Length: 166
Image 1 (cartoon, rainbow, N blue to C red):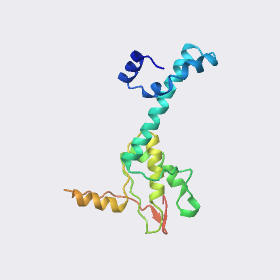
Image 2: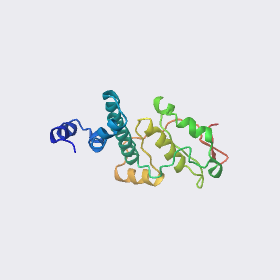
Image 3: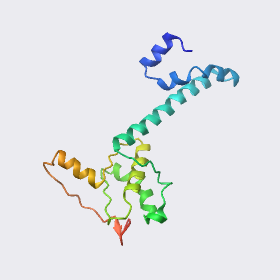
Image 4: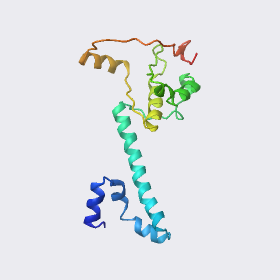
């Protein structure tokens, strides 16, 4: 049980990860003969982990990512997607260079899953993502039409019907 005064301070500091785990931590510290510094590291680690999980959850919800495939779970052989390109895009270099990403290929070539896997990797790096498939883009434009449109120069991301970095 956390004393009310400590609970209030933790809430004021918005340390809910510590609030959730503190009741069991003193006994764990005693059982493992942890020093005060080790105990502090342990309870702060709980807060850091919880905040990281919340950041990922908020990021995926805000990005409208519905399939939480990581790039490592993606079946590159089945989908005939260039593994090297997906991993290269997952480094977020294009974001740091101030560029956007638009994946284009013929229907039936899986773009959604690699796009969402790349987006998830970018979210894990602490950056913001907005994922939209073509139906959602059209719906968004119908709600609020563009006043201007800029068409960026780009190289094709497909070659022979497959995603490619050539």
